[in-house]
Length: 281
Image (cartoon, rainbow, N blue to C red; front, side, top):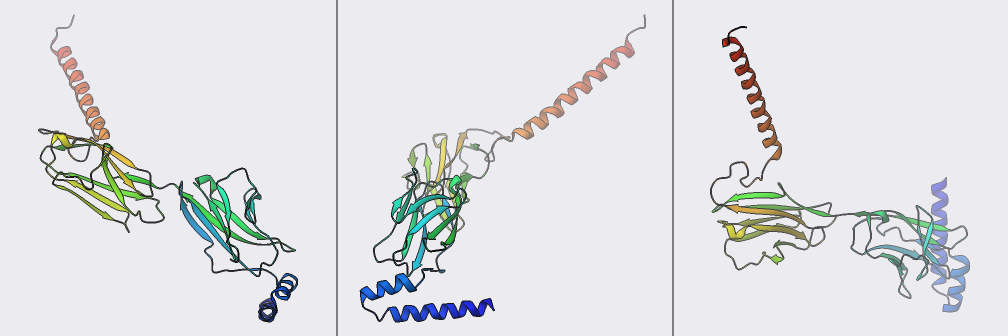
């Protein structure tokens, strides 16, 4: 029954709009204000993910608005953010955008933070008020260089670093590699290759035949993520516990414990031997 009533209401509304289109501008405005109720365009995106620090927008479309006002409300505390194109909050990161003649009312949030995540309502001043909810998820995207934060490489071997942009809702438009403060993607030094796969959000840096002069701090910086760094040491000779994979401190501690236990057992055995050979008094 409810479905039939909604269908009838939709047909009536459609008929009213069709009739209003045939009237003069003045009569059309009066007709719309008195007869046609505003309604939301349900084709707009109702949930979006934004990256912390990067401007995002929520788009609300209202048809047959007439002389009603559109407001943006933050659901968690029912705080009125904007009314029309005016901002009603001290937080100037929030702004309403609207073009005359358009049915779109946009809430723009400059430099969104994780705390801005939640539900926002686009509300129309009808009686009773009607609203449409939008969910915003603000994530902090961070880069990660696989492996340890300190890397030892034998001179003459390759430096091989892989960077991944984590929690990035969109692929980065670029990923730059730095050594210190200098971009090395397009370095004049031969033997450097960078392979970036945007869809998988990964970038691989390979420096062939590394020399001690290649030692330094290497940073991976995706366009839409916080950067990550690793300290690379290129050394001459062997350094078995640290080559390419970095020093495994847990392994070193584990081996040290075995050595200490062996020493304690040896001391106990030596003490028992002395007791057995010394004459009893």
